[in-house]
Image (cartoon, one colour):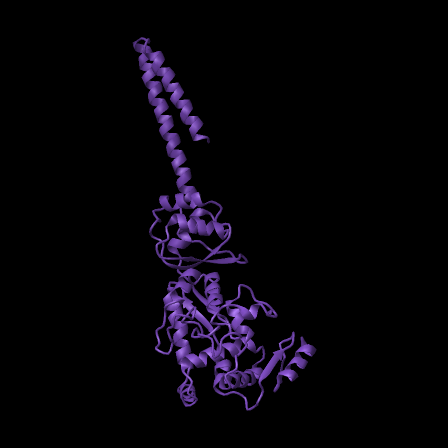
Length: 366
């Protein structure tokens, strides 16, 4: 039913009736009054009918059963989000077809301002009422997420966002300042002070957890994994925890295979001991806009404190979040005496003692 056309039609009829009634007799005026009353009655009934159609169309059911075989889409409601912002998010994810319908449904159901923070399981192509029902009546879900060894802070933030656990920007913003343990050194150069201390593992988070809750859990896991024996070994080697993690992060990014970790550890520690630049491509990749299989001569001239071709010593902070094997390799380097290494296209590393020997291997494997 086109309500606007109906309303205009009733309005025109009333005008005609009133105009005609001005010159009518008593009986005619009585009939006119009856017609006016009937017209108003019809208009009211039509509006009630339309209101009922709208209400039942957008009414949120008490329970929505997600169908088997349907793709589950996880949606996170953050603090302060209203129906407009939520509607846009649901529309972008293909869950609803109209942001306006969602906004209207939230108003009709008294839902605006009552959405709870957390992550919800939804499906694509839901009605506005169904979406409202899930957000009002369903329980938030606990989500399992795996953070691989070698992920950096930005990669972790992106994955957490994709899994519906927290907003990527919120996580990155907190990562610039959050240092709950004293060994997480604060300096003005490191990009993210938490880099290296977000232990890679499989976690299960409550979806009402904040970015800080998630970050603290991962940092606490690192602290738990760092055993007293490992701390004692670092102290005996005159290595701070921050230096240990920084070195382990380099090993994590430089070695594809576990057996290479302690050998590369020996090479890098030796270079530090003789005041030789580390010349690690991984440190360059950390500050480059895109990952390259091979860095160029121009790349080695990048102006950054993370450029280990231009600066001596360890970079100003970790470049990734290392796993246990890399941490142990940093503490227990191999008993070798190499000074150079290079990986072929399959990640297999070759080692040498002299630069000439190294160049010969590079020519063969690259």
